[in-house]
Length: 199
Image 1 (cartoon, one colour):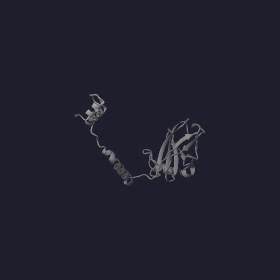
Image 2 (cartoon, one colour; image 1 turned 120 degrees about the vertical axis):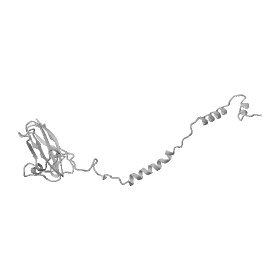
Image 3 (tube, helix red, strand yellow; image 1 turned 90 degrees about the horizontal axis):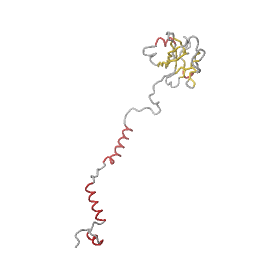
Image 4 (cartoon, one colour; image 1 turned 30 degrees about the vertical axis):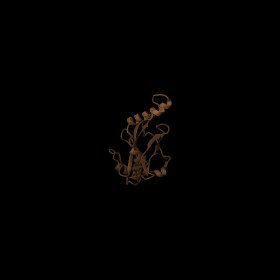
């Protein structure tokens, strides 16, 4: 009588050693006893619910949103200019005013200050005039008028002040409102300071 369930296969094979089936059975038992228990991956099942909750929060949350077509970085008025010369800045050359990037302001005035404190007005052109209207005087980002450098511009470094405003300003109004400590000309204005080197 054969007592082992694998004994019959040993008798038929004519060998008294472990058969291939016995070896596989023993390996299965050892692996079953030594393998770590399988963890339930509950988070995989929870992923669809979490994704749905996040979507609802993003769609329905009353958070502040920028308008769809707002300029990134805010929609406040920006004044930007750069005084340059086409052929270097010397006597007879023309100072041009590149106002690319300026938004929200309608008018522009400019003046410079020499090292001795003398103020040289560029715009408005006279005491009777007001600042330049940008809608009419701006083509391709460059102001349509320049300043020819004369004897009033001896060689040196100049601080050039660009005064952007929402209303036209005269020289007197700019002088009366100008605060050189805080570099402002009052509400509705933005003052940008640049350097210009005349050789």
